[in-house]
Image 1 (cartoon, helix red, strand yellow):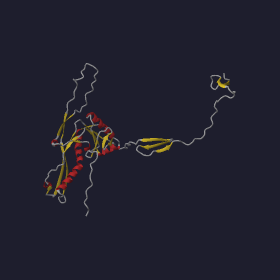
Image 2 (cartoon, one colour):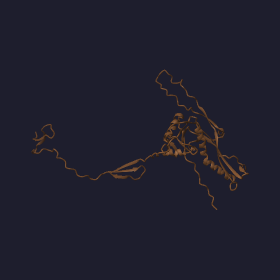
Image 3 (cartoon, rainbow, N blue to C red):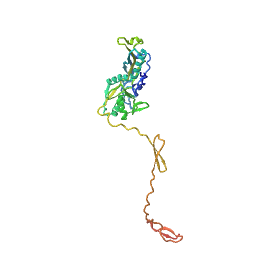
Image 4 (cartoon, helix red, strand yellow):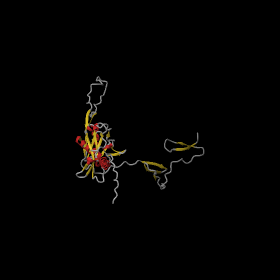
Length: 331
């Protein structure tokens, strides 16, 4: 008889939605009926005022922007289920299996819910010829419409190509654009699209079940034991615009971006030049002194000192011409 052992542990995917969501204290749970909040106006500030000592007042009147807006978000529930025979499984064991399934897959379910909301609200943005252009386009959209640091969403397939082509990178354990905008590589996201949204916040409950009475979840007509684990969520973001870029053509083909090369370090040892990559212990030296060359032909004799003269005489210039000298007695 084969031995029954524990299944291998499952770890959640890196860089999912929960890495960027600010989950708030669930408090008394009133948020489970839905939430509303006041948000800042999404439009840019009025043009700068240049005070050139004119008669115009510095204070009011000015063209003032509207006050805060009101946004809302509805709750949703994520469910993990387990169905088994009551033979060999207790209600508690079945419940443990349901909770394990919920925890393993709830992030993807929340991503799927949010993705549908984002797509529904999104403005189409041009720039889908390459993944680099798509990321740049949603960065620009967020800057124009949100005016703050947002979030960029894409499927794990698109994210892998984006990393491969250098459009996004992993820093300190999370995905970011080159400008530092966080990126979600969602298991629950779909399609060859890139979406930019305002920052996402939310609430989530503790795990709960449909009934604490084990007999309520036993179907005696089929002899099936059911277990259900649920968690309630609300996800919200300021309604300052969502931008979506549809990638087109052969956006995922072509070569990969080259990685950042290590810095080189140099060291001179006499005529030898040493080179090593930053972090290496040893230099590799090359002697730049070449072999002794062949002896050259003798050069022509120089002008030198004129011949003649006697002891005590000195050499004086006879004229202003070069080398026109003669021996003469000292005055």
